[in-house]
Image 1: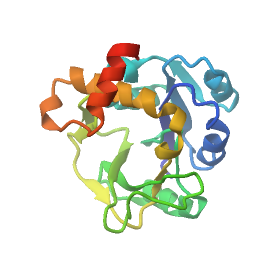
Image 2 (image 1 turned 120 degrees about the vertical axis):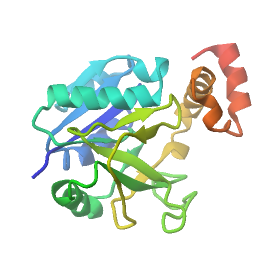
Image 3 (image 1 turned 90 degrees about the horizontal axis):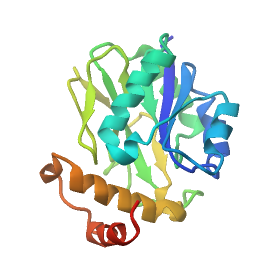
Length: 227
């Protein structure tokens, strides 16, 4: 068996945490780690009561997604030294219980030729999963979310992070699907849009990926309102 840490960056996610912990605790046999940006809605206290290790650090809002992923790997090694994998899931994501057995098989039996596992992600418009933006069978939106903690892989770029320095990445359409509900979390859309506009503006590698089609709009809001 190869234990896995489920790790996440969070900020004011109290409304989504009961649902998130309900499924995460069923597969996190190595531990649960949350790096919180300074929530004021009870997220920190709730997560600690659920048994998670919580570290308060606004790294994702100051340095971006790549550095935040690398920090999650470092903290997983520190707080859960017996764990083999680190996997990242946001508070507005889940995998269905019907996919748990595939998740466990992958983490326990995947050969060492692979340092990274990518999961297909489905972008849902609602929590009931009645309308999807993409079909994972032809547009899987691969997410490199599970990494061996003893590997040298790391994430780069502040926004739309990429992974480098790995042996191989395992991609299989039969892998668990990440259900992403960000379109249903309307109260966070503006905050995330402003954050992404800010991170793109300070990224040393910003010329390697294009602007989002609504980035100019969020940049104007950022100038007026701040983060």
